[in-house]
Image: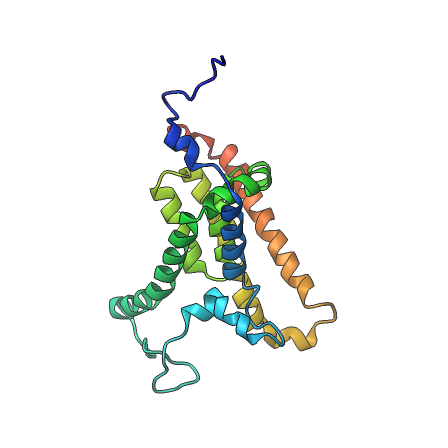
Length: 227
């Protein structure tokens, strides 16, 4: 009879929590497609936009000058303007957290942890379950930040992990949305495929995060000794 048993520090229900089945992988694929922008403005298949996070987030109505204004208005200053701006972020963040809770129930976090840890751990030194927050940031900076905070509050990541994730997220934040909305004005002037600048910016996000990781492990190493 084997002497191998689950230790008291890792009870059976906790061991079961991180088992990954087919449903978990399906949930992970679904959440990646939804948050990555893969379904946004697909030529000939506009109906796929119904499964895109940005599309589901919708838009506020316009006021005064429809070309530039939303319910936030124009010319606001100080605390009141800041409050309205913060209020405008609530629907996107609530939607992201709600969707994440659903996909987490079906095992997406467990699957991400298993698949992405071999990639993210050697490069950035962060666990694989941070991958969903990073992927979400490609479309929405606010939602990506909210997911990162939730991971930290639930003790799944350390303070150092948050700093490294922040370096990745806020270098080219909301990359896909900003590139295809603001950057699209320059597409006609490009002399190379549109995807190339996007890939360069994506790679540079990793370069910046690796640099920050190096700084945290050297210059600022003592700041995290008590974690």
